[in-house]
Image (cartoon, rainbow, N blue to C red):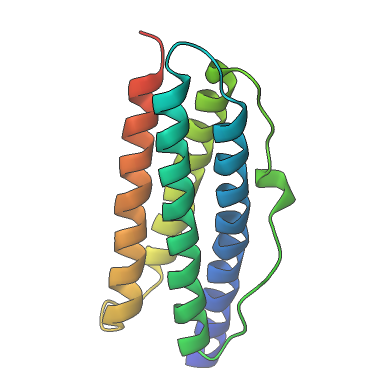
Length: 143
């Protein structure tokens, strides 16, 4: 595979994740606004913080896509826009989405030459954040 093809594939993968990050920010903000129950205030606050993290991920991805010579997507992954009303639904959906994001970013990371340090480290940082989100969401699950 030529270097150009490899870069195009990485740009395509990054744009797919960018579209997912756009949707995640919307989903978390929406879930934060509809959550109810005894822990609603603390859950809502954390969901809003995660939404901010997702926006920062999108910003990083746009920078890396541009650095590779690509054009960042402005699309939103509709499949990642999953409404929920109850805390249980919100947690379940977002755990599944974080697990999917970790898989997606791990796949991208495996295809990146570690010599491309900025891209490699950027994806590692996003994976770390997504893992943190996953662990926090799992703490909200009922025992």
